[in-house]
Length: 425
Ligand SMILES: [Zn+2]
Image (cartoon, rainbow, N blue to C red; front, side, top):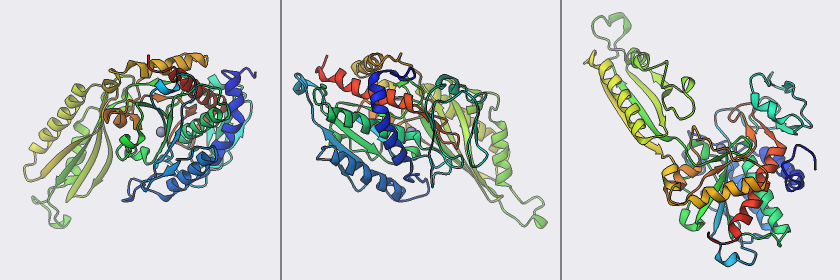
């Protein structure tokens, strides 16, 4: 076995996995926040149909894509205790982020990475170990990147390819015990819609795993709890030449609100680990009307409420100085921390830990500073922690993936099937 692989199984899975991954990343599946359709873009349906074809070829005869773009399929149980084993789901999302160019992805494979900077042919993009310490851990690995002017799409096509490769391996090796596996490929995860339209009942699994993490060994059962707040300020628009004593500039008031919010703390750029933040990420402003969209994040509901209260008091204080302006602050919940929903079913995380260890990987239990499909799915009754994929630098043209880490993830899924095949503990 080549030293960089976690197991002979991972090494065996790697060639087929790479082939699938390179095929999937070439399909433009970028989701869109400005679309009224379901799914938000037609490219997601294109990849979904391709996956259905491949699942049917593997013999998963019920593989189908629904009108919303969700792909579901069943791999029936095998082995002496198969009848007693619960149904387990495997989930990945087909869309890629709208935050970087994603059309015309041309993946490049860099064999046996030497540890130096990787200059990509387009866009002046360089992957430098000085700026990306994760590269130091993958010297000797085979890395996949884009050509430099698009994202790669490892988020989450690495996850899709890993699920497909694990399923193909289980089909080809019927002597390996497995529970009934339900495969689910979702759409529009990157715009926060993936878990909303997912038919949990039809999926029919007792629990599931998303393959949508990053670093080798990640097993995540905690996400942010998340809210969005939209501040709308109405000012008084007057011709600037005749505005003396009359104009009330909503844009200026919005700027004062932003300036009054904490900037040395409670921001994405000044927090880490388990700290939350208030993040204004879109401003649209004229003197007549200003709209500021904030995302508010924490790991504790109580602290999230405190951040929202701080935002509200700040807005009130600033706008109290200009009673001629009117304003509203609309706050709504986006997704909950999955931790509280996984607490009652400890075997879901325990078996994933056992599968990782069986693959020779020490589990890395970091809370996700974001959400996954599993955040909403867990709250909707399908406990769904998240596993690593081996992709890195997501949502950027510097995105890269390690084939060895991807193969480790696919091998972990094969072992996870074995862990569940023995029936309930
Ligand atoms: Zn993702």
